Length: 232
Image 1 (tube, helix red, strand yellow):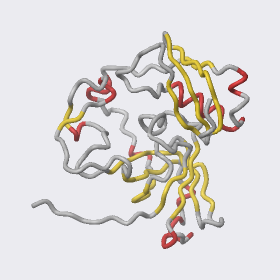
Image 2 (cartoon, rainbow, N blue to C red; image 1 turned 30 degrees about the vertical axis):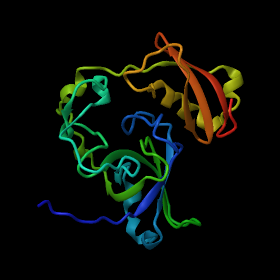
Image 3 (cartoon, rainbow, N blue to C red; image 1 turned 90 degrees about the vertical axis):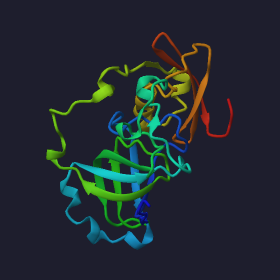
Image 4 (cartoon, rainbow, N blue to C red; image 1 turned 30 degrees about the horizontal axis):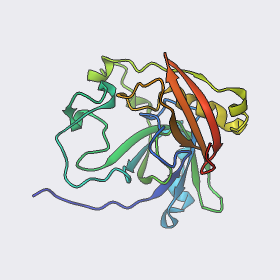
């Protein structure tokens, strides 16, 4: 019988993504993305962060709280391979695994010890949905980077960035301090890898905005931006 255990949720992340669609496929792809780690009340002790400000990056260990499933499968279909080829679950970063735990390396943009919510961490490049439970935080060390590492099947297929066109009338609807992040997210191609219909209009929610776009010949064109829930 497998051993079981419990984890305490020490914090939650506040990000621009209320839904899964549009979140970068891994951390660090969109450096302009900003998020905040807000600690649970029992962990709002500034002493717990003593010395963390000296590190440029941190590891976030977190839970796929919106991808829970009963049971598990030994194989999954990685998006990197178009969603059509099965690989072993432990050879992927799929959320559908025996323990729904994620791992992200993010840049530590700031440590703020005294706020209305206690100490908070400001991070860049996170790939987490708003409200994601954080299980642990660890400093990223220079030795964590292994230049000799190989990428297995992920190195066989590049994920080219799209060219992004945002007409001025839609760009004007996006706060200036969110524009670079939005463009970076769209350039990563939020669509599922098996969908490539140039006539289809896709929609995603980002920073309180509903953003609609289409993709043709490697160019993503935004065709609508409105406050979330306002409709287009």
